Length: 346
Image 1 (tube, rainbow, N blue to C red):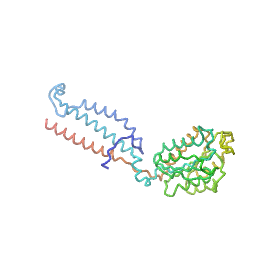
Image 2 (image 1 turned 30 degrees about the vertical axis):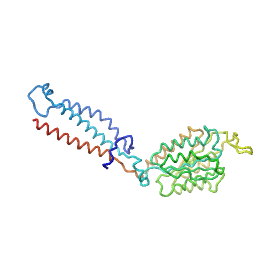
Image 3 (image 1 turned 45 degrees about the horizontal axis):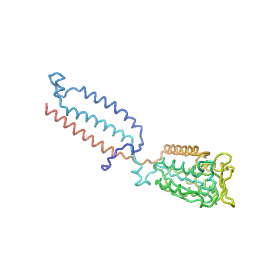
Image 4 (image 1 turned 90 degrees about the horizontal axis):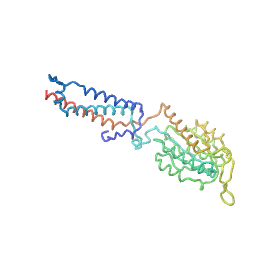
């Protein structure tokens, strides 16, 4: 407790931030206290005019009283911060598995050749990566992992709070070295296996694809059943514009781009989401894809708020308590000294 004296309010999050609105009362309280001090009667009666009392008043005593007012306002402010229940995520990452506050999230992203289609800028895959980066950067306390899949699937990054490493792994993936095809079931099943039994209570998979399942041994609905058995919510996203898109095609002469019809198995994606308690979304451009991630974020936050069995990480008001106790003792010493000084003068 005594080793922590950092009371930078911006480095904390708060379980009860509504108490901080009471800080708006500080200027009013301060004005009332200073006004009362200005019109305060003398501690000892004098039979001389008030202007003469002002002249003989000890200026150091006046400043001590003013400092005492500021210290009392500081104590009030510290008390409000304590009531707001401050905590810091970095303090909890020493033993992160002891807390069940965050979410375990797996991003299962289709990296097949069709994800190089240019109906997104610069293509679907890079747009999906960019939005994933934005999503990850907004997380706090969640463990996030990444599964890449095409005709096969592999776990590029297990669930982690090391977001720098996670984004690095996402950036490295291009899908060219993988077996081609779209194994939605295999990708989903691989993501499910990464969310082990010792994971956090809230488990989510965000599955993104631009095509139809045409590879892999595990069917998408069988993978969805596996996710459901482990209480994993799956949000599915179909990415691709309506109509035709400039899509890469392998020819005997190499890779060419041709306009092809965008075909997404929306029926299967909707079934996966419905079966696991998630939702299906269609992203036709990067802006709509960003909005989808924001909606998923809001829905999961609401779920966390509604969970009565949620285990909150402990508050860490130690620094505020240290300063509050120190200031209270300082106020006591100053007021006692002031009382003794005035009594001796009398």
